[in-house]
Length: 94
Image 1 (cartoon, helix red, strand yellow):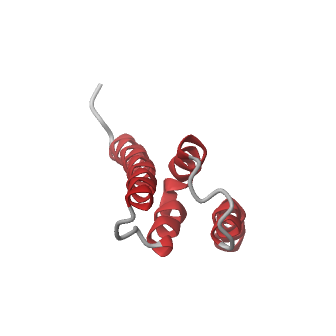
Image 2: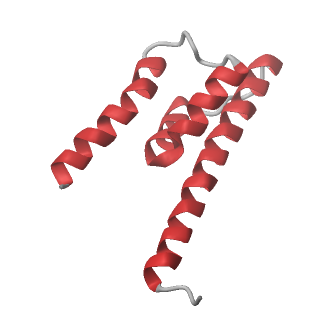
């Protein structure tokens, strides 16, 4: 069965979501390792942007897996608000 434009777009979109979630997970891991070693850190804004553009699940998984930024405020609150922001944006756009 040949791929239609809709199917190929769906496959591309799913691949992008998997990629950004993997990248968010990896960046949390890198930041945690750098924190332990006392090195230059990944900025919180970078981590939050990755989460907002679709990597929230990877970010939350990494946060729990590595016990990283679990008590850091306001970062924790901002990260937890991202799904609510997605819903709000969906309501405005729809």
